[in-house]
Image (tube, rainbow, N blue to C red; front, top):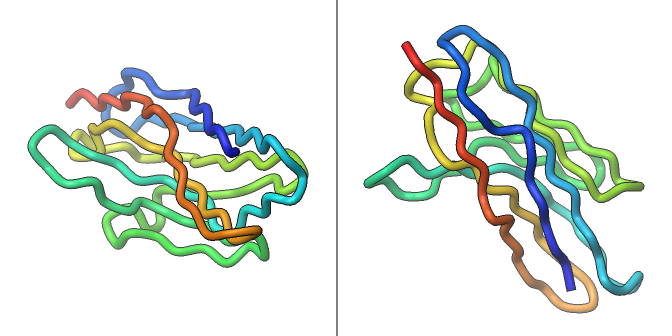
Length: 120
């Protein structure tokens, strides 16, 4: 019903920048996506929320990334972006795109993940 494809991960030095993109493909027009966002998972850790954005543009950020990361969205393209500035080694993780479908029924979708590695 909804497929998410991430791009933009890679290796960067501390204080560098990266921009992640996630394109959503919806198989049928009756499916409606509300919230999209990004989560991340470091080795040995749980998957944590990084940032989310609703279809109306309301955003939410983890405290650890406030002021450094910016989430944005193109509703017409079902695409969400994550601009990451001032990266730190502790930002190293696999970043997963997330989408919450609200119609015709509620469902949650995940991308395959993209690796972000920040070297010190």
